[in-house]
Image 1 (cartoon, one colour):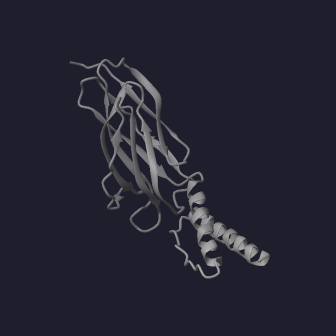
Image 2: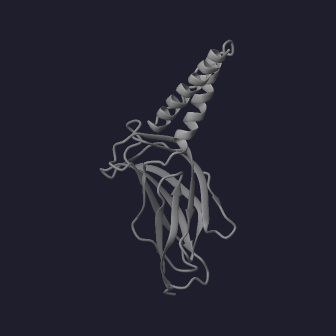
Image 3: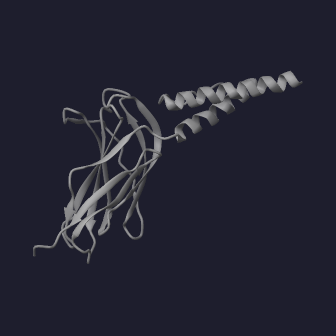
Length: 203
């Protein structure tokens, strides 16, 4: 009996180790076979599920940054901000799956809810037939949230950088100035600072 319990614990540990390794390597969930007869395969599968989720929850090795400057005047036409994502040396494979994105607008700005996603390669060409982004905006307009499948360098289409183009506009009554307190948070990747300038309406 003790041996049977020990074998189940060892099976769970093996599954957990493999699940975590697969997740960190960016491999798809293996969905291992389950066998309720002796319970060992069941334990391995349960351990695998847990290990895979733990691996996915670990910090994403991604670089997130804002591309270019952004400015708008209250009552203006609005603008867009590009938030870019890549791996540290541009070539690692990342298949993190669905991850939560939380973007906080800089002071004086609000999101308009439009988000587009595409891949931008190092040679400046674009690619990758990405699905539409279903984003939500908080009541005050400062916070934009959505989940999206983060994967890079897994095939010939998803190279080298993901670019999220988000609609942004200066709020009525915003004081002119450059604000750097915006934040782009993608899963557990290190956050990026978002910056934008409120300019005076020339009219």
